[in-house]
Length: 254
Image 1: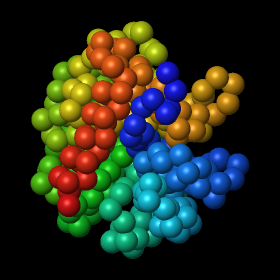
Image 2: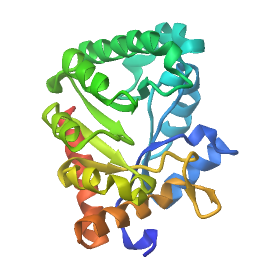
Image 3: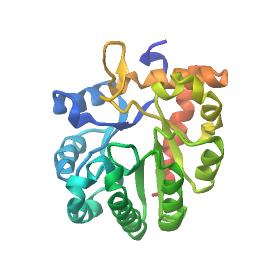
């Protein structure tokens, strides 16, 4: 199976500005026809990402403030709010309660609450959300601050339980799934709990690998193939379903 067998290709979470040549990474997505959401880790990175994406059909830039950077960059929430009216897409945002970042967890929650309430006020925003070791708290905060009519959340690399997946579905969430998630055999039961009607694909490049190199958006076909294998479906059919899901998500917040 190769990428030319699966269309459309959707990479809903990729750090294009962290590849060696940012402009070429964007141009490659455009040449290869991969719908790519270019997430940012700080609001200061968004303008350049937006500038490059604005000239394309297939790339969109998301306005982020990564939870792992909140300890040093939490004050940039003011700039984030200033830029929010200029974009439909938000991310990477969320919470990270891993050992390296737990000291800033209270501040992360403050920033994430501001992100969610600002998006609810603005409405019609699509968020890609990080939830490492914080799935319940992330879902609690979404339920409290961003009801489905006010925006939509795509849970990136979500590692919650099957019951948490069901709760997220009830909250209107989608999920972006990558090949590494699907290769984790201990997660097979939970992975099957993701409803295909709420699934998008991602690479989280360059933080995942395809062979010996960092994954690129066109490698997202591997996630499509993994989903097809998980559900005993044809990869081409799953690829079409991902495209339908993307259109549905965009229509829900238009």
